[in-house]
Image (cartoon, rainbow, N blue to C red; front, top):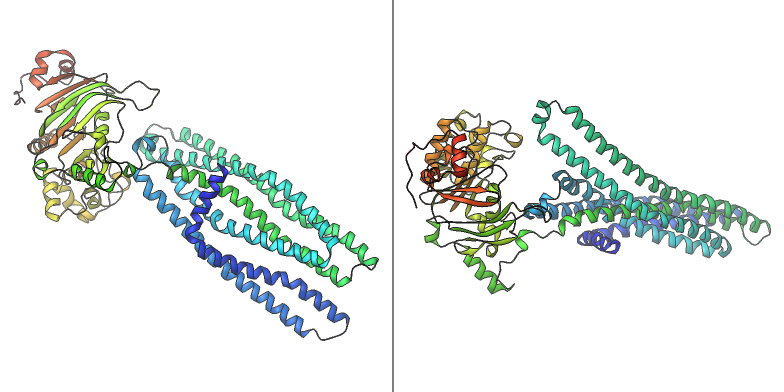
Length: 600
């Protein structure tokens, strides 16, 4: 797992390899300038000792200081630029992948956690894939160079320093896995906090109306405290790793001071060599700290990249080949041709057949649909009724291929649903969800979400159909008025009509309406029923409703109970049969005196 995460980390850095190499080279050049300074200082002391001019050494030392600083600055900018590009690349990958993931996969991950992976984790990746990577490389090279020069100055002192470095390095190596583990726990805790915030802000009105602000705040505080504890663990081990760099220099300094002083005293080492060696020792602080910081950051980065790749490794829907395509170019072309409806089929609704369909949301749960079967011929209005929790909305989710069935079969226009490419399938479907979500943005953005090329005439026609023209005329900027977060500036009925208009603008062959009129008053509901009846002449319309007044004119009504279709027929036929539908009709004060609709 660790090797895989390291490879993934390097994979994110690879597109910016040239910029990183350039930045590392400039930084290394600045490091070389630093390496040369103690040698020039040694020459400066030796020249002073023989009473010769030192202007050459002073000028060279100044050039090394200024030149090293400039090259290091340019190198740092090149690395930072590459770092931002790495973050952009990772975020583009996640942003591109998230909308295309299967609904079943998204159901298992809270939105706040996914947001954390796109924001916080990619920021950690930024440091690891660039700065920490370069720091580790430059620190290693610089440290190696200093050790070589120390060995050249005095082998005995070099061996003493090397022993100290290896001893501290071994202790640091034991700490690094703990840093990685603690960092991963901290990032997961932040994801949980983000999920809690998303939960609170997504239902803030309900929370306030329930007087639950303190309870929700307490739950968030627990999550924040968990993130704090995990962060402390990561900081504690990071502090151990960071302190080791200073400890190396301090212990090495004491060793060199004692051993070097003794060697100068017995004449086996010159004072100038000892000064040069001590200068290298002080310069050792930089590369050792750089190396420790780089390795520690890489541990944090590998934890972040694991979380990022948990999302990237999920298969998007587009990756699925339609059954029988065979993976070949010819097979894919044939499948695409089959998925495109003919002009004749486009002028009529879609035909649907459910055969013994079994579906459960989790493997360990009871089936929501357990042997459901029915057939709907193209065109016309079909209503689905039944008690709450019997699987009505699940039928729609399966038709949209948000989930795949566990048993039986579903066919659309005679083709098994699993043979349809999801994108092509949904192109033929208009779907109005039960809560009729409206996205932040303008009213126009919401209406054209599924039909970006809609003309002004088409927009006007649909707005008139769903009785939204008065709303548009009353808005300060018309269709370009912002509707607020989740349509907060709109009423529930307005949001429902916008969702219906959005679906109609797509000109679907199959229209799915899940409680689409639940927030409309009686007059608007009656008008919308007329619109739906008109659409049903050329489109297959499926309606789910608890208010049975919206489905009495349906060509056919399906009564769903315990995951199965228990009865089917017209309103009048089902009333005569009695049973569940008649009981539901009685509770909805729906009498048998209404005119009987035309039968199939």
